[in-house]
Image (tube, rainbow, N blue to C red; front, side, top):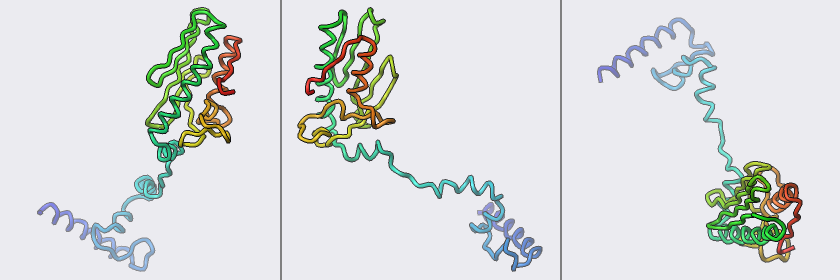
Length: 201
């Protein structure tokens, strides 16, 4: 209590000095209560005030990914992802008949394809990422990417009249014109010279 009274007395004395030195009609200082917000802001340089209070003017806007999660139930996400990965696995099976030592594996939401020693064991990994409601991929050609579903969140594809989603309904998060199916098909064609055909096409 002694410290608080001393601090209050100190600021009160300082305030009285300022009031005697500068007229009340000055626009720089107004009548104030010691330790009030106005008093403190008058003591703090304007450049410091901008740094201290800049967060007050900031407004949080939910990201597209956040909005996607809010409108995409986990049950439907797993259903759509599992269907998509299975369709991709079926399409990749063409590589088995055209190439040797190709290893294609789908397990627990992770699809991988290793082209074997002939192609320096180049490997693509495609997996579902539940918290973000995305499909992530790792490619020896283009690196890591994230894809977001643009079709019906209830499990219908983006094309009218189609009951199951295609990998083309997963769009690259940084370029909506790029889709999972086209990117995978294009990269494998470039590396292996084998053109894949999607089971639903």
